[in-house]
Length: 190
Image 1: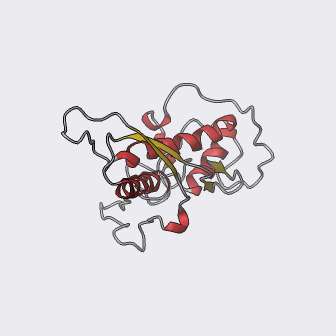
Image 2: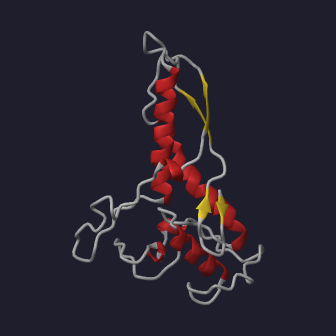
Image 3: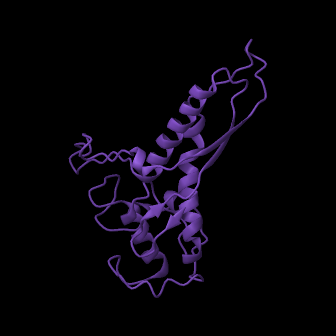
């Protein structure tokens, strides 16, 4: 993943997936399942979010408000397979339906966090919107408020809090975008 520290925008440069789904009967269908699963998991990491207002009404209830990926939002994936036939089926096949989905979400989020770790970012709450990434960078390096545009302070040796996973610690709600629920306030970092 590539992260623009001035805007918070992320760009996927490459994604490689290798799955063991046993004996493959129809390679074209398997490729389609893996590609579809990858896009589903990547979409969870970068775009998709169910947002509710303060009264509990879903405000992302239509495709106008709920961000879905298109072919233009994704890249070509490199996929491959290892084969260890299943001993419990007569054809040696295994399920492929969730193969791409399972690992892609944490892989993308971890890639973003890894790219930002030198700046002191230890967590980005999903979806990793440009706003959340931008705010997390500024919060991690202590650059004024989250609307600051001066990135000269974004040095690679910014101090980090080593206390653990920010998702699960008090204050994690600061990662939410404005309008999100779950205890989030209108401000915050990724």
